[in-house]
Length: 273
Image: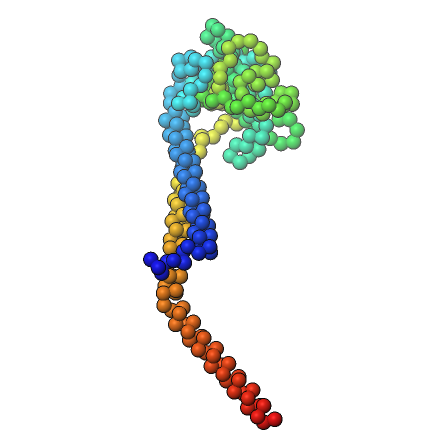
């Protein structure tokens, strides 16, 4: 082990610390990407399991809050729209600027239950988007359950909200009273056809993404940092064990010979004088 005594020097302790920090950082970054891969896989499994389900009456599936395991589940509601429509701006769809059109549906369940529905989207251009009227009177709506978004503390302009949070949507639409579902429904059809002049939402992207490959790449980098330090240490040990000493001796002999030659040349010049 004496050949590795140099590892206790300040320089090599610093190198070891630097390589260790790099390796640990890469391990944690790999773990972070792995957790994102697991979250993406769970979300994809939820979409694939619920998206193509047969529509069921919303009252049979949900009481007060949309459960996490029922997100994207197909439901059917009957009732009438009430209040004004509300928009959520800056919600791109397939890379295109868009605004979502929200409304409140009073469900025919005898209790005056209110459900926020996302009727579709319109392209977002200059000025306020033109919103097509919702159907008057009784309407049958089919859609997919979605969890409510977190509230936003900002005050939006009239007729707009920043998040699809049922309380904020109901307040912006001028609807008061009634039991409000904690969640909303993304509409796929109204009375058997897509919402009038509103674009439907595409199927969610369920590709696995690159998180798994990124995780393995970070772990390979961590292993590379360790291997790199070992290689450098072994190279230093090999040099200090033999080759450097011989090379150093040869260089010292060469330096002495050159010096002797210079001294002899100076002596000869002095003698000539």
